Amino acid sequence: MNYRVVFICWCSLFFLISCAGKKNIVVLLPDPEGQVGKVEVSNKGGTQLLTEPRHATEIKSMDRSPTPPFLMKQEEILKIFGEALSAQPELPLRFLLYFQRGTTELTAESQRQISEILAAIEARKSKDISVVGHTDRVGSRETNYRLGLERVESVKELLVSKGVDPSGIEVASHGEDNPLVETEDEVAEPRNRRIEITVR
Amino acid sequence: MKWTIGILCFVFFLFPVLSNASDDPVGSIKTAKGTASIIRQNQVIPVQIGEKVFIGDSLKTGPDGSLGMIFKDDTLLSIGPQSEIIVVEFLFSPAEGKLSIVTRLFKGTAAYLTGIIGKLAPESVRFETPVANIGIRGTKFVVQIEDPGTR
Image 1 (tube, chains in turn blue, purple):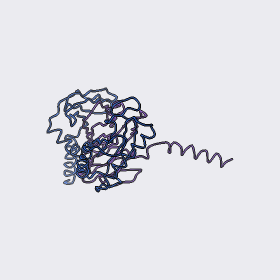
Image 2 (cartoon, helix red, strand yellow):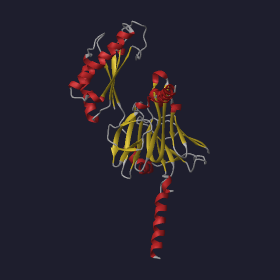
Image 3 (cartoon, one colour):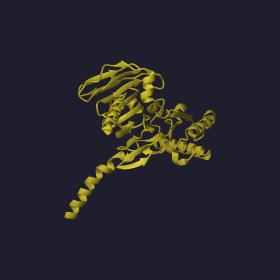
Image 4 (tube, chains in turn yellow, red):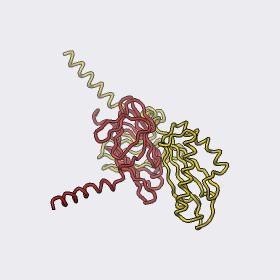
């Protein structure tokens, strides 16, 4: 008899726990720059568009339309999503380095930026660094592809000589095909003589 | 003759696999806490920071777990405790115009911030759940899906 009471108590406790706050919800949030986009939640029952920050919709089942948007309190968002939100990785960091014309020599200003890049790699313990080389349109496409690669290799060597693990660095050359500033062929454009470093 | 057919069959079966770029990682794990694992072809791999993630991988957390990953296009995806999500599809070759990212949350909580695919081709970003699909026109949202087992 006693066992049965205990069993019923447990069952109702489980039922309460599983009901409390466990709903299917989608909430739109501002991005790290404070911008708010849009999400469209749809199923067999219909479609609901969220366009305002912290607006949410609840979905009861695949066949029932998502509810009209309602505002969710910040503390409630943190209560439900706090752990998922704090597990979000940091945004990748991007650096641009520039070169002297036709060479693998960094400009003086870009040389000074190297310590900043090393500090970012160290702070994140990053093993996920990509280095992509670009050139201007002086010279042939093939020559520029090779120059882009030489630039990337020289910077990789520099980073490795300062203690960065080479296995965490991915390199590529886009030659003259991916300019920041569009130019005619054979035009010298210092802003295109660059490499892009992404630290993730 | 039988041999030729055998070899032809072999080549035809093999070719789609070879031509598929699914051998490349789609991203890597950046944060991990508590019980968190990757399930790859029925194998459970405990998650470590830096671990590569591939198409078809499921990410799963226990009651004390959470984890976060970054895709090659800079999409940021993280999940809270008691959660499970699978990477269904990922294509990222902007030069060829091949862009697509599809994930499916089975249960638990997730936070999502769109990356370059979301900027270049927002219609190619899809987040699926058992009760609804989410289309994303930028940029950040969170989702909770109740565990069907506790219903």
